[in-house]
Image: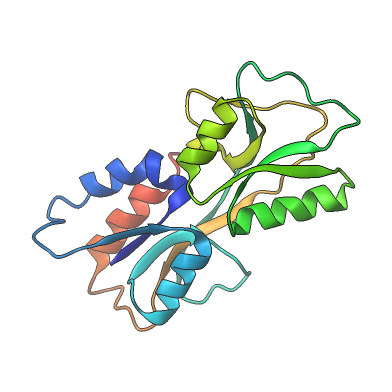
Length: 190
Protein backbone atom coordinates (compact mmCIF):
# COMPACT_ATOMS: atom_id res chain seq x y z
CA UNK A 1 0.00 0.00 0.00
CA UNK A 2 1.35 3.39 -1.06
CA UNK A 3 0.15 6.69 0.42
CA UNK A 4 0.11 9.89 -1.62
CA UNK A 5 -0.50 13.35 -0.17
CA UNK A 6 -3.66 14.65 -1.85
CA UNK A 7 -2.25 18.12 -2.59
CA UNK A 8 0.19 16.52 -5.01
CA UNK A 9 -2.02 13.82 -6.51
CA UNK A 10 -3.22 15.73 -9.56
CA UNK A 11 0.30 16.60 -10.72
CA UNK A 12 2.22 13.40 -9.96
CA UNK A 13 -0.25 10.51 -9.92
CA UNK A 14 0.39 9.69 -13.58
CA UNK A 15 4.14 9.57 -12.92
CA UNK A 16 3.64 7.27 -9.93
CA UNK A 17 1.48 4.91 -11.96
CA UNK A 18 3.83 4.95 -14.97
CA UNK A 19 6.69 3.79 -12.74
CA UNK A 20 4.67 0.79 -11.54
CA UNK A 21 3.67 -1.03 -14.75
CA UNK A 22 2.70 -4.08 -12.73
CA UNK A 23 0.41 -2.18 -10.35
CA UNK A 24 -2.60 -4.40 -10.97
CA UNK A 25 -0.77 -7.72 -11.01
CA UNK A 26 1.32 -7.06 -7.91
CA UNK A 27 -1.59 -6.05 -5.69
CA UNK A 28 -0.38 -2.54 -4.99
CA UNK A 29 -2.92 -0.09 -3.72
CA UNK A 30 -2.59 3.68 -3.77
CA UNK A 31 -4.19 5.65 -0.95
CA UNK A 32 -4.62 9.39 -1.31
CA UNK A 33 -5.32 11.76 1.57
CA UNK A 34 -4.09 14.58 3.74
CA UNK A 35 -0.94 14.50 5.86
CA UNK A 36 -2.75 13.63 9.11
CA UNK A 37 -4.73 10.83 7.44
CA UNK A 38 -1.61 9.32 5.84
CA UNK A 39 0.44 9.64 9.03
CA UNK A 40 -2.25 7.69 10.90
CA UNK A 41 -2.38 5.00 8.18
CA UNK A 42 1.42 4.72 8.22
CA UNK A 43 1.57 4.49 12.02
CA UNK A 44 -1.11 1.79 12.08
CA UNK A 45 0.79 -0.22 9.45
CA UNK A 46 -2.03 0.01 6.91
CA UNK A 47 0.27 1.53 4.28
CA UNK A 48 3.91 0.66 3.60
CA UNK A 49 5.21 3.90 2.07
CA UNK A 50 3.83 7.42 2.19
CA UNK A 51 4.74 10.69 0.52
CA UNK A 52 3.57 13.38 2.91
CA UNK A 53 4.28 16.61 4.72
CA UNK A 54 6.56 16.07 7.69
CA UNK A 55 4.58 17.23 10.71
CA UNK A 56 7.51 17.14 13.11
CA UNK A 57 11.29 17.29 12.86
CA UNK A 58 11.45 13.55 13.54
CA UNK A 59 13.44 11.52 11.04
CA UNK A 60 11.98 8.20 12.20
CA UNK A 61 11.25 5.88 9.26
CA UNK A 62 12.31 8.60 6.83
CA UNK A 63 13.56 7.36 3.45
CA UNK A 64 13.98 10.67 1.57
CA UNK A 65 13.19 14.30 2.29
CA UNK A 66 13.32 17.73 0.66
CA UNK A 67 11.73 21.17 1.00
CA UNK A 68 8.90 22.39 -1.18
CA UNK A 69 8.22 26.05 -1.80
CA UNK A 70 4.77 27.19 -0.67
CA UNK A 71 3.12 30.00 -2.60
CA UNK A 72 -0.01 32.10 -2.43
CA UNK A 73 -2.31 31.27 -5.35
CA UNK A 74 -4.97 33.48 -6.93
CA UNK A 75 -7.05 33.88 -10.08
CA UNK A 76 -5.21 35.64 -12.91
CA UNK A 77 -7.67 38.55 -12.88
CA UNK A 78 -7.89 38.99 -9.10
CA UNK A 79 -7.66 42.60 -7.94
CA UNK A 80 -5.01 43.49 -5.34
CA UNK A 81 -6.09 42.87 -1.77
CA UNK A 82 -7.08 46.05 0.11
CA UNK A 83 -4.76 46.97 2.99
CA UNK A 84 -7.62 47.37 5.45
CA UNK A 85 -9.48 44.11 4.78
CA UNK A 86 -8.80 40.55 5.96
CA UNK A 87 -7.21 38.13 3.51
CA UNK A 88 -10.00 36.04 1.92
CA UNK A 89 -8.54 32.61 2.64
CA UNK A 90 -9.54 29.39 0.87
CA UNK A 91 -8.78 26.63 3.35
CA UNK A 92 -8.36 22.89 3.61
CA UNK A 93 -10.57 21.20 6.15
CA UNK A 94 -8.26 19.95 8.91
CA UNK A 95 -5.25 20.97 6.85
CA UNK A 96 -1.81 20.76 8.45
CA UNK A 97 -0.35 23.23 5.94
CA UNK A 98 -3.18 25.69 6.51
CA UNK A 99 -2.69 25.62 10.27
CA UNK A 100 0.96 26.58 9.77
CA UNK A 101 -0.02 29.41 7.42
CA UNK A 102 -2.65 30.69 9.85
CA UNK A 103 0.10 30.85 12.47
CA UNK A 104 2.22 32.87 10.00
CA UNK A 105 -0.67 35.30 9.43
CA UNK A 106 -1.31 35.56 13.17
CA UNK A 107 2.40 36.20 13.85
CA UNK A 108 2.43 38.88 11.12
CA UNK A 109 -0.75 40.33 12.66
CA UNK A 110 -2.39 40.06 9.26
CA UNK A 111 -6.13 39.45 9.62
CA UNK A 112 -7.79 36.80 7.47
CA UNK A 113 -11.20 35.23 7.10
CA UNK A 114 -11.94 31.79 5.79
CA UNK A 115 -14.21 32.21 2.76
CA UNK A 116 -14.27 28.59 1.56
CA UNK A 117 -13.31 25.23 3.04
CA UNK A 118 -13.01 21.87 1.32
CA UNK A 119 -11.21 18.59 1.84
CA UNK A 120 -9.92 18.32 -1.73
CA UNK A 121 -7.58 20.61 -3.61
CA UNK A 122 -9.62 20.49 -6.84
CA UNK A 123 -12.55 22.18 -5.06
CA UNK A 124 -10.21 24.75 -3.53
CA UNK A 125 -8.70 25.53 -6.92
CA UNK A 126 -12.23 25.94 -8.33
CA UNK A 127 -13.05 28.42 -5.56
CA UNK A 128 -9.92 30.43 -6.32
CA UNK A 129 -10.66 30.31 -10.08
CA UNK A 130 -14.09 31.74 -9.24
CA UNK A 131 -12.32 34.67 -7.59
CA UNK A 132 -13.54 34.28 -4.02
CA UNK A 133 -10.14 34.18 -2.36
CA UNK A 134 -6.54 33.01 -2.23
CA UNK A 135 -5.02 29.76 -1.06
CA UNK A 136 -1.60 28.38 -0.38
CA UNK A 137 -0.17 25.41 -2.22
CA UNK A 138 3.16 23.84 -3.05
CA UNK A 139 4.47 25.76 -6.07
CA UNK A 140 4.77 22.71 -8.29
CA UNK A 141 1.07 21.83 -8.01
CA UNK A 142 -0.35 25.21 -9.07
CA UNK A 143 -2.55 24.57 -12.13
CA UNK A 144 -2.14 26.60 -15.33
CA UNK A 145 -5.52 28.25 -14.71
CA UNK A 146 -4.17 30.04 -11.61
CA UNK A 147 -1.13 32.19 -10.85
CA UNK A 148 1.26 32.73 -7.98
CA UNK A 149 0.01 35.83 -6.14
CA UNK A 150 2.50 38.66 -5.74
CA UNK A 151 0.30 40.86 -3.51
CA UNK A 152 2.24 42.84 -0.89
CA UNK A 153 -0.50 42.15 1.68
CA UNK A 154 0.26 38.43 1.72
CA UNK A 155 2.90 37.45 4.29
CA UNK A 156 5.94 35.38 3.23
CA UNK A 157 5.44 31.65 3.55
CA UNK A 158 7.78 29.07 5.05
CA UNK A 159 9.13 26.22 2.98
CA UNK A 160 7.46 22.90 3.58
CA UNK A 161 9.41 19.83 4.67
CA UNK A 162 8.10 16.77 2.84
CA UNK A 163 9.34 13.28 2.34
CA UNK A 164 8.80 9.60 1.83
CA UNK A 165 8.28 7.63 5.03
CA UNK A 166 7.85 3.92 5.61
CA UNK A 167 5.90 1.96 8.18
CA UNK A 168 7.71 0.46 11.15
CA UNK A 169 9.49 -2.75 10.16
CA UNK A 170 9.21 -2.20 6.39
CA UNK A 171 12.02 -4.05 4.59
CA UNK A 172 13.56 -1.29 2.46
CA UNK A 173 16.32 -3.49 1.01
CA UNK A 174 13.88 -6.22 -0.10
CA UNK A 175 11.63 -3.59 -1.70
CA UNK A 176 14.41 -1.40 -3.13
CA UNK A 177 13.01 -1.15 -6.68
CA UNK A 178 9.58 -0.15 -5.35
CA UNK A 179 11.10 2.39 -2.94
CA UNK A 180 13.39 3.87 -5.62
CA UNK A 181 10.55 4.18 -8.13
CA UNK A 182 8.18 5.74 -5.59
CA UNK A 183 10.77 8.28 -4.42
CA UNK A 184 11.68 9.15 -8.03
CA UNK A 185 8.01 9.66 -8.89
CA UNK A 186 7.19 12.00 -6.02
CA UNK A 187 10.40 14.07 -5.82
CA UNK A 188 10.32 17.41 -7.59
CA UNK A 189 12.18 17.59 -10.90
CA UNK A 190 15.77 18.80 -10.60
